[in-house]
Image (cartoon, rainbow, N blue to C red; front, top):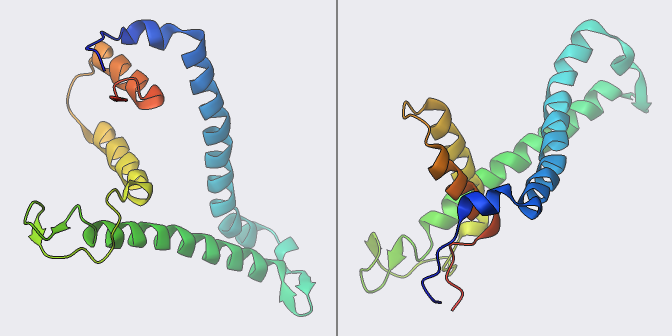
Length: 158
């Protein structure tokens, strides 16, 4: 690919980029609100109301069903996190027969790019890093990174 200068501020100001961010927020914001409402509604509802004490299926109350769904949700999240750590630690990114990676040996999981699992962990670490960072914000760098992250414009497509 030719060395082409990308004007990130121009891309960030474009209508297509703004539409992309708007569509992304239309998904993320409601899902985040749902998660927090779902997560905190059980302790609030069982502490202050009695409607969850009514039977749902035989002697099983709505409180038990609600607790079961939260239990399943928690284990799904935990399983995703732990599986990502395991897959990355057993992948060619860590193990390589030629010694080009951290450890020498055959990887147990042949994924050359386990990013499909480890990327969510990266987002969490990036978020926490920005929250706890004492560095001053650089608006130009932020704009460039935002455009790159959402469009992939920095990627070589040879």
